[in-house]
Length: 462
Image 1 (tube, one colour):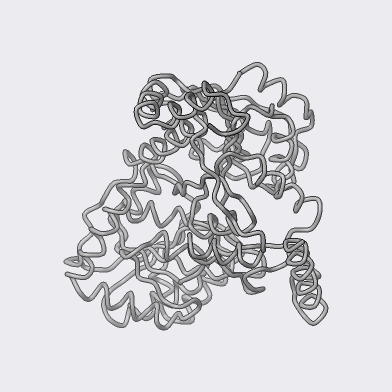
Image 2 (cartoon, rainbow, N blue to C red):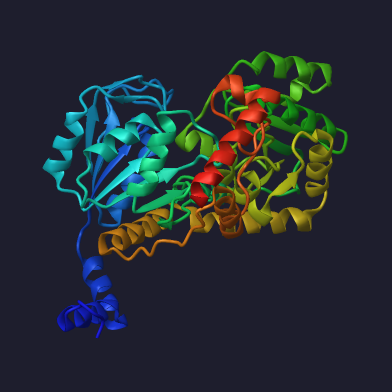
């Protein structure tokens, strides 16, 4: 017998770890409706509440907290009815995803006390100010799970770096939307459970069309903000190449400052009459356009501050029977999978040739189309909610076993890369500073980065 450990305690621990006990506990928990309090800044958009609807349908007692005002295009001024409770709280910094915060910080602790949740689910980044508010308000014995989409290993200044470290120490589990985001979390020191959950789609709305190459013209599609980094101009250039092979047109759904430039480019390339501009679409209207498209283009390019974090368009397009083609930027290759047509970032000529090759080969087109639908089958909101519910059960049961992480930050990042793959890179590198003056690089910034890393390694050895 171990010194100082009572026999009864050792027996109880042995029973607790037994397979029979674990199976019984899992069965009991599965029969109990879990109460979940979720916070999500984008929850004013009815489309973005699809996760909560799926969780509620799976038997979860959900309470969703959203800002009383949020300036996104899809945000509802007056929230439509939902099969779960929605609480609106005033925030300052409305529209600033990572720096907004509740006006009355005490209101969230009162809400926690009122709802008595089994799990607090914070759908915000761990370095954000609002996540910090939630974590400070949460009782020590309340299990917390968090979302993350940040797939770049950014160096944050105080106080955000402190918020991030505190979240890693407090949170029981993370559910990032990509392997790259998971690698960032692990590399920064999070030792708990990580369950990669994709962003889902409504399979009742997004369903396969009858796309076939036995048609008069091939339809290309671009969906998203019309800004330079999203690559709408490259979509026009791809159309111009494809037009030399067979009749084709491009449907552009979105708004933004690149709209006029795209039209000018299309006319200069002789395809002005082949580009159809539509305003931003949502729901059934967007789904109907997807079902007409043969190829959906995702030619996103990284900037100094951003790289594609998931690409919901990819999932919706594949579910609708379209083939996805884009650049190997951020999470695009991961989300598109083997069904996607992926070329190096910025190589618009290769993208155009690759798309032309796919729409010239009926067998390859059909193969990629079927593969995309097969991938999409595991990404419905129902499937995502099922996995998220399992995560809730796991943290409530305390089943998470912390990973053994190296003390050395560089060794920890290497271990994270081995587990989840590399993180994403912006044009400022793989570990850019979040502070603009340092993000631009140069001798001073590079020297400062080396000094910070050296100090961190020395602290780990000490």
